[in-house]
Amino acid sequence: MIPAFFWGTTYAVTKFTLPDWPPILLGALRALPAGLLLLLVKPTLPKKGEWQVLLTLGLINIATFFGLIFVMAQTLPSAISGVGMVSVPVFAMLYQWLVKKHRPSWSQAFSGLALVTLAFFLFSPGSISLNPIGLGAMLVAIMCIVAGSSITKSLGTRIHWWTILTWQLILGGTILAIASGFHAAMAPDTYFSVIENFDGRNLFGLSWVVGLNTALSYGMYVWLLQRMTVVDFTFGGIANPIAGIVCGLMLLGESFTHTQYILMMGMIITSLIPQMIMAVKQHRVTRLARR
Image (cartoon, helix red, strand yellow):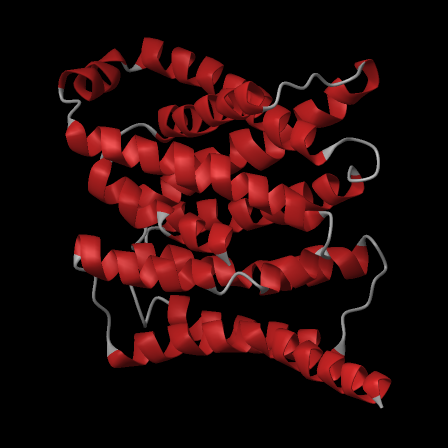
């Protein structure tokens, strides 16, 4: 829950400390320094046949995903971004079912259907007015999580998890840095404004995003994926929306109607159903084994 919590703070912290910064620049500043920091902590170098898959992973998991996350942070309410990402298990289940031929359990299927239903009412135009660019970024970001997590897990027996972690950040951050350079050439005023108005709040935001949201959280994320299924991991991300709601309220003063809060809580609680059922089954098995 620790990495999920810090990821949930990304939206509010970005909007509060780094407003109007280009998403591509934010993505590069989040990924590349964190990757270099981890490389300094434990130096690693991919083998000859590992560069291509790590580059692909860096493109999906870091370059594309980080850029989209900051688009969401600047265009959607923090609480909505956090709660929306709870829908990841639905896409994870569909991916595992259609691509990997792993059928979901009845509890996961029920939870996924309930999440889709609650999300339909929460995100409907009649309930709340949301930026379509932000919603599109959220949908693609969710797909990046599912695809990137599956690739990461498949590499667990071939490449050491620290190498995966470090070099996907470095390669993805490098891609974003190059893209940011082209963007700066086309819109120099935006980047000059960032430099001229840089202050202590910006420094705090960058330190939070690079240190806690990336170096620490992604280290835990990659380590955990070698020990859990993608679906199990994504269902355990309850801390993400809670952090989004709380930080949005505390830092940005975001508020919603009682109905919207009920729908948000419903999505969060529903995402816990498979975990609770699994915990009960494991408790029964352990108790029978002791007898």
